[in-house]
Length: 399
Image 1 (tube, rainbow, N blue to C red):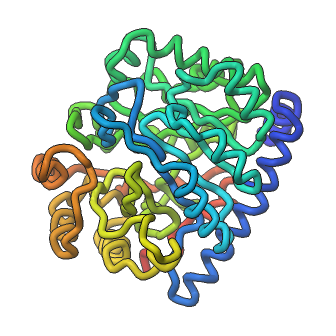
Image 2 (cartoon, helix red, strand yellow):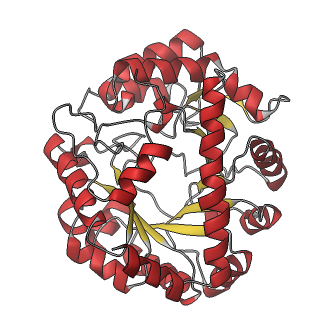
Image 3 (tube, helix red, strand yellow):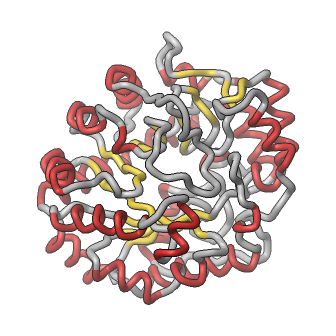
């Protein structure tokens, strides 16, 4: 698996793109996690990876989307992004996930990438706005990977994403990326309407044939004002996805990403471990993307390290979640999320109707998440075991 994958990366990607990925994400990313470990030993909490929803607007209307994509456009402009990224770099951070809405609707996206060539950016996108011109500029900048979301076959994609001809437009963006020799990934929010078609070896081989280098399977979270809880996976399906990912990691020349398990197959939550927190398009600092409440903002005059490290709200969320479950506190205990919000007087950052966030929590029932004791599926491939054991684990949160 390793040799064929390495051959693909060397022959299918631009050399500068591959070098920048190796240095900015690989080497500097490892350093960032090491500095995170050092901070934890001092009792300091600042995540090595920040995920930033830079704009709320989007071309699609997906089921289960938690972002207010209708109405006035809001985005974090280049000046505020400069301050945020520069402050994080002082703490050793080099990797940033850029979400939306649709990030390519941000009028200054490429300018932001160009101002921080010493960082690496993963752009979560539907791919519809990626033209050859955009892809050529991404190749020139060499410091970003498009992670293109695909949610099913043609008819399933149209239903899941609320528009027509979704898949063809997405594949056109994907092809622009591969023509321009970018490192490109495909993300899927796995739910009941796509689990049989996309959690499948033939599908992954199809993506390899299209020049895709990595795949990220997210577990569908029924949140937002169009939650569609009927799409949520059953506990058996969650375990099926985990077993499939572990098996394919040892078989295919393709990187497979997950964010919910350690090397032993024990569940974890990136928010609870403190490895990642989220910033929304209005600049609100949230525990994670689907917990849409905040007490702090990036517009605070303090350095972002001081804001996050000294936030009672973020700390309480992190510690309470870790004490309650190794899984997702939103899915398992929406009532406890509501208690934490009220305890800290956090503001609703859904930016929908007044009280929408609490109302959506009230409407949620408790359901199983990735934490299913007794059903752990350890990593089989030595490389993934090694990487997770050193750079993606519980970081002492669950002791």
